[in-house]
Image 1 (cartoon, rainbow, N blue to C red):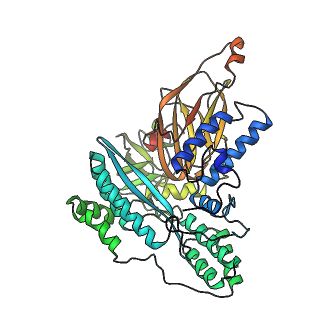
Image 2 (tube, one colour; image 1 turned 90 degrees about the vertical axis):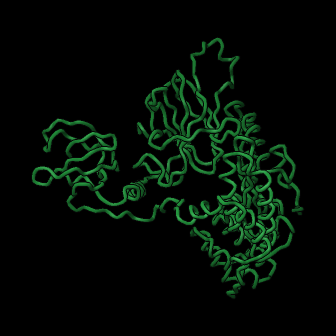
Image 3 (tube, one colour; image 1 turned 135 degrees about the horizontal axis):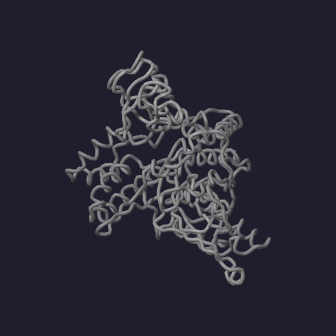
Length: 495
């Protein structure tokens, strides 16, 4: 889209880019500039101010909604809802037409490279017609470039189906788009369109601030106008064009079946677990309800302890014991022993865990807060979290023992001090709603390990001056050295 304002606040210039740069170019430029001007490397007020301007530019330009508003109006909006009315409405990023029902849509293309494949996002603020055409182009690109590798053969049908169903319309982003569109219409006196755009925002609003802004717009407009939803299903030429590649493959039936029958998303954390407290029976699957449950060799508090179990561990009930107050159980590792019947719950263990973690969240950790420390030293490490989710980063020894665990919010870049000498692997977990009670995220996204280690050596004082600024750095979203997924229990083994 041709912009009305090129770069009035100098956000692209701070990153060394020109307007129209791709999201990948913005990400790479920020990472390179952050390394060059980080205050840990260049102490002083000037470096700190330049780094802050860099962070502000990145926050705006990496956000598709904020970037579109900046490109269109020159306005820098960092918060969720900005009280300052926009000077112009959002236009379609392809045709430039202003509508009352724009959508921020994310589609994908698949590109194969013989033995591996990757998905490339195609995102923007579209009108309905341009979104359909973008879906057709993405389907054509995936059809031409996506099949030519074993992973691509499996991924491409899924991506084609995703695009066929309209791609992804993120709720938070589309609430902001519709609210800003309504504010722009209201500012120019078009109260009917303002009311219609606000009505569109209602289906996406999730926060109290968004709901309040919509109510204010409707009150100021003095009317409640609703337009026919142009984003519903329609049997158009674009839809049939995208459907054709799917119908051409026998594999499509399997992919559609999996897509219709498998629940991909985890249950929302607001759903409460059903808990069964009835006497366990042989063959039941029950879950440990307390921390550090002792499995004993015989029923009774004085019997020898065989092992300890974490909360929410799944156990198989073998048989009641004694007067029924104890039961014989079997652990996932095959250990058998006896536990009190009242220490076991029935129901969904995963829902039980999520409910308990939500209820024991505590306060959100501060940026750089050390959650766990087992050793101290004089070394430092720079950590760059370019992910859109908060992260917990751990440094572990070769034996899997955690030396330190730190909380790194989304898009933060911070310095971790007090590290001892030695070589350490770096593992991290991302997600939302960190729970202090569970030492993890209520809504986990992924757990991974970086494919390298960091080593800290003792440096003689005579060499310290010549090595100023030589601080090791790690990036959780390093494209050159991507992280390797690991099981969640491996990450949390010593929590």
